[in-house]
Length: 545
Image (cartoon, rainbow, N blue to C red; front, side):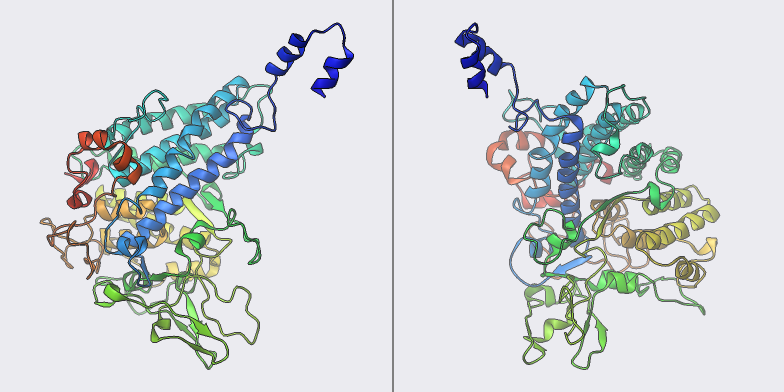
């Protein structure tokens, strides 16, 4: 078409046509300037959530929610608390390569049309990404990460980054509260996460502030009231929670782009641990009990089941991480439909994926799957349940046990509601003796173990374990009586090079291999111990008194 215009207009010289070509952008060709804010936001959200939930899968292995069938690979290494440079890579790559570099171009595009809500959402994502990864790795590039003239950016300490993150969240809240310009696209046009609900983004920002400020609970300057105030401005009900709804397009669709991240990440090799099942089933030291006990309604949603040869359901066995089993097992299994049998006895450790995908009445159920690992599951990114547990912890610290108990019970109930448990069943469980009913009997352990369940597959799960010092005494030794996470012990196959002493526990992830290979000078300048195995047990800034 451009050539035809040149031919039919004899009064135009060739240079005029050349100029016409130069000043126009092809909207069908990717570049850094063409996409609008509403075109940029969906992939930005998708890439962020991929990295965030993948970090959550890694946290679930380190935090002893997940075990894995034996193979000397990344996931098996994570169960022994060894985050090598390979297993550390994806959250880092997903953030820096796929997400963070695209935030400023989105903001620039939004500024052109005064799309303040897009700017606010972009700043929330930027704060969220740098905030959770700083907690994950302990140090990372922030100030220089996006400078095209610096190929080896310096590493900034997580404490410095948290200050930047909290300020950025304040900016985001202010932008989200602005009236958009007359030609700005509505947020709903590009928001695949909160469906254009600006109030949800504001509450998300406040919830993140509460989350990040809570991390400083070991510090002398910890401001419990500020955390409580922020949590009260975060999500207060299920509809105000930030949840990613994944799409199940069926077993014959080759693309995994829309399926749940935990379905993808756990695959067919992940198994549940005995500790995780003990927490769900109230089988731990100091668990609430009495004359009106009731099984947790989430049990069959969180614990996969299989059927035996007589078509009777049985629950998976949990892998005891303190036994010798994780050193060489459990073994992978296969099912033979002709003989209606499994290849070995480790079939008692049931896969987390629903198998068969769509069973007929004659099929043997190899696994019912779990709520989080269904193909069309939900990703609970920041919820009212988390806010209630934050309130419960802080209120208990403030010696307000009656209010703390109410928040503890609300946290349990709201998580059940998010999982689709009926209100009637939730009400029955809330009145049972399987949860604490007397404010005077409520302990930090009760709150945090219930939060452990509600924060399944979340990076925040591992933050809590570190903040609460796992199940140890003041010296760092395992102590069932004084520890918070009852039964959480060092695994039998622990990576002794990184954790040589009984008082050593996982405190940070390894630096990604990209930085080790191409930016080692800046890595070692930030922390001379970064290349040592024991770097993994070094507490990050908020993990120290």
